[in-house]
Figure: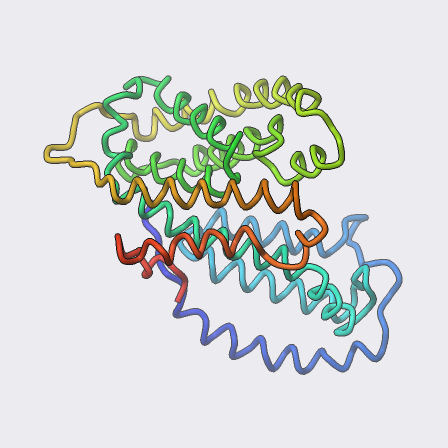
Length: 313
């Protein structure tokens, strides 16, 4: 899963985004239609979002540039002609950002923080040791998906997906099929469905008084879905690049990096539970979980330097 940093695109993006934003800003004074414009009954906002996802899937070496461009296009479209829930135009957009900034900051902190965490995990050499323990036939990929499913039952789904992707890159020797990547994302989402600590939605249900055992039954559907998408994705990956059990000589586990990974994950879980259970009234005033991940990362810098070059730009 080679990747290419998208920092070169930032200058081009800012070059056309800022003038266009300034051009459309006065439109907030003109108002906006009550209903968002649609094409054959489908809101154009959704179509633009789907095109962004398709671009990421087709050109996955340029995901950051495509994602940021898609965000800009959708934002400008909504500012111009499609009202936000908070109101139309630029004022509605700014009000919307004011309501959602904590969610966005948390998401950004988790995405970037867990990207560095996944590199720590990869550099620990544990993924390189896993082929010795996974089945070396078609079942190996399925077992890995089940591991990701279990991880996401107590971890954030972003962390489970990134760790799963890191392991997959190692056990499949850098040849991971796009279909198997989709299965990793699906497994990381399905695994948290029946756990009150594995997903923000179920955590909030728990806080509101729903018994954990009532949520647990979601694993019936999630487990079935796991088999439906997991087996075909695994067979596809096996044909594309099978797991090999040949050990790589000279592998030594870096336990300091293992400690860093464990500390970051434990910190994220602890802060998530404490804030949502005991301080729920202030949970939407600050990106506590994203900040906690970064505090743990920075505290461990003297122990092992993170792979800063993994961050965009």
